[in-house]
Length: 335
Image 1: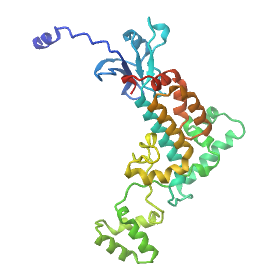
Image 2: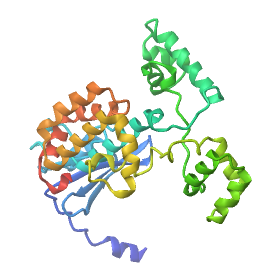
Image 3: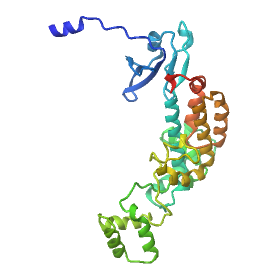
Image 4: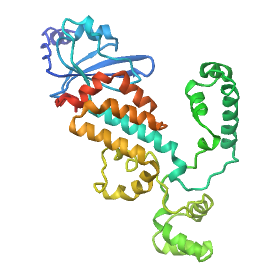
C-alpha cells in the first residue's frame, strides 16, 4: 500500500490539446456498453478514453478544436450539437471509414449478384431453397395486400431486415444463391481434370495422374469435387469475401490492377459495370478532394438501386456536411 500511495501521489501531466482530434467509439460489451476513444489525429497518440459515448460526456471534454469522426452511420453521432459548445467544432468524416464502408457495400452487392459470376449448379429444391420459397410467399402474401413492413414483422415474428430483404425481391430466384466454396486442393489440377473428363477417362486414372503431378489428398475429395460440379464450371469460383475480389475494387482503374486480381475482376466487373463506375467515381473524389461532387454521386448511385448500397448512402446523407468536409479538406486527421 505504501508503494501504491507513492506511485499515485505525483500528479499526471495534463494531456496536450491536439490540433485535430479523432473521436470514435468502441464496444466494451457489444450492444450494451460503449466507450469513446480520443486520438490525436496528427501524432496518432491516445489522448483520453471516456466512460460512455454520450454527447454530453464529449461536450464536457471538447474545446474549440476540429473533430474527425467515424462515418459508420449506424452509430449515434459522437459530435455534440454546436449550440452546446462555446465555439462549434469543425467536423469531418475520416476517409479510412469512408473507404471501409464503401468496401462493405461492394461486398454486399457482389454477394447479391452471386448468380452472375458463380456458375456452379445449385440445388433449387433442397431444404434451404424450400425455406426461402416459403418465406418469400409469406412476406408477399401480406405486403401485396397493403400490410406494412412493421406489421408484417410483427405477424411473422421475424426481424425487420429479414422482411425487407424478402419484400424487396421481385422474384424468389433473386434470393436463391448458388453455393460458395472455398479453395480446394484439387484446384491446382483443375485444367488437367477437366481435360481428362472431356476425354471420358475413368476417375481412378485421373486420380493416378494428378497424384503423379503432386496431388496428395484422398480420392473422396476428388469425387466430392466432381459431385459439386466444380470441375464443370468455366473457371475457379471466387469467394466474394476474398480481398482480391472486394477490397481492391474501390481503388482500381482499368489497366492498373494487381496481377493476382486481374482475371477475377475481369470476370466480375462486366456484370456490374454501373457499380464499378460509381465506385471508381467515389475513389476519384477521395483522391482529388472533390467533396462538392458528393450530392450528385449519392443521387446517381441511389438511382441505380444497388442492393448493398442503401445503408451506406443513408449514412452519407445523415452526415453529409461532415462527409463533404472530410472529402474536401487536406488535413492529416481525415486520412
